[in-house]
Image (cartoon, rainbow, N blue to C red; front, side, top):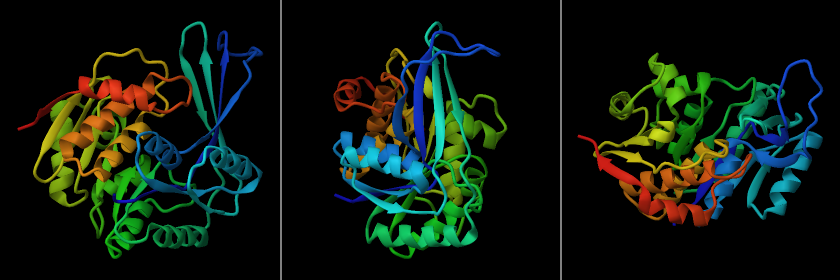
Length: 316
């Protein structure tokens, strides 16, 4: 089985709670908070383990909050390589309004990284990857990191025979779309992120297919995936294109759906599935994640129940 190394350079200690109502200029009495170790790559590794995948997590975590974060992940038994960037870990807050079920998410910024820390982190990731691995860089980049950090990492890893999957946003995503010296193994984005790149408010299947094909044809990525929320996802490679539609399910919390999706895609990749199989397991994992509360990820039993209900069709 091809090992997976997930990379989280800008994790957060996630706090989630609930209030009867969320209103301005008032003291909001909240329920006892729940703490979870968040961050794209860390969540991907946690979901990967639940799905029977194999891998480790590379996580940048410093300061007192970083120690608290590390203790939570170690209590879960997650295999990790730890990198201290010399700055304190950031926090995030999610508040659910009990009256409506609406969720309010507040993402705090982390401390900036100097160029020397960025360089040290790239060296450490390359060393941790080893040969013939799949590296998955997921989540936002730390302040101070260059926009093309994913492309720099992809070039380094390519020299080792290692592919890089990327799930990011903002300027880093723009750089990935433009492409670099080495193609990404996988570039995943959601509808909002794809729409921002394309200048479209709500890209549809045709938009996603055309965009995916453009990314593959230009050499930016060998596989491109655009998720369309409850409408499913489109996946494109050099020799195939597929659309998946999940069943209608009750959404409890959308937090963790993207990370669970990537974990499902990587797990199926490890097992040798083709693009269709990768997309099916990825969508089942994402659908399972939205059935769970707060920052909870997909559960294996929900994924197993949902997988046969995925509707897949090839795209011409």
